[in-house]
Length: 114
Image 1 (cartoon, rainbow, N blue to C red):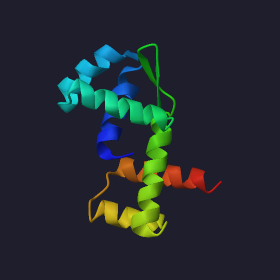
Image 2: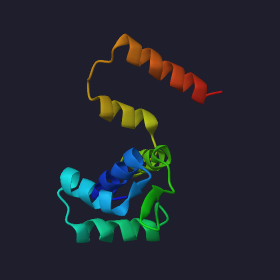
Image 3: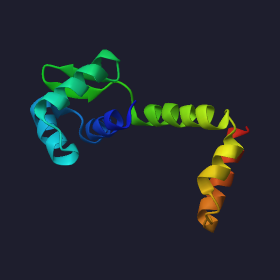
Image 4: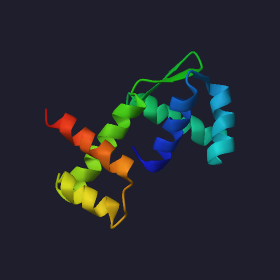
């Protein structure tokens, strides 16, 4: 998804199910979009099987966690040739982790190796 589409989908994930009229108002308030922009992006995401607009009620077909997983895997593949260590090195960029963050990352890695 493009950045604007992702932000739009986040509005839906955070508010679903949402009436399309309310979605237009929310898109105006949060994204500064006009009604036509909202409906154009909604139609495109429905055509791609990401969202559903059924009788003016908008819901997500693709879950937020699935979209995040796909997007993050795409970044690692494209920018780091699939290397998670290279991605983490670039992402951290010298940033210090707290003890809690480091322990959480260790736990995640241990679970992934089982």
